[in-house]
Image: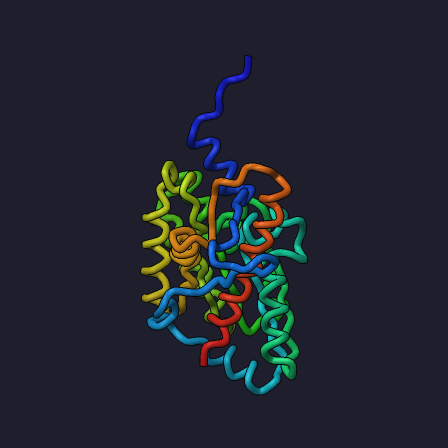
Length: 251
């Protein structure tokens, strides 16, 4: 007889596989997708991205590299073309048609901050990106990695990217009620906030944004059917891609 999975194991499986579901908001008309609003002041106090914004406005070439784990790969929605980096590229192309925008998704399932940092010189810097969006902290929270070690690793990566003149957005972990109940995300959320403030880089507060969507009825974690979860994960990534486009294009 197989053992019953523990709540923590179930939550880890959820967070790694990005088994999230979105339910249409109660006010959406039939056949329409609900809006995915951001709360007032979502990016009001985040550091600007002047180099990136200037490149968009000038119609220049803009290379954006995304680093992260399973939630940035897009498999939960059906593949990379439905990932939030892909939706980001689409949103930015529509907003800045004169710019030559390329989003390179280098996310890998179960990617740690250390794993991402080790790839910077080999895989990221040769692309000469204008901007790197670094989604991190999830696997460290799942595995219980020391927060000081996590902070030192991300700081070293920020130093390396900064020395190359590359702007950075830090993206914190996703929100899930089930995972949040058994995985201590708070120390890693705090570490990313401290790193961002110390280095004058912005945080895309995905955790807070997803929690806002959950509490406002846009996002729901109760769906169990795999096909429904896949379709609704695609909706989540669409929402995140659009929100990120607005975030990185701030003047």
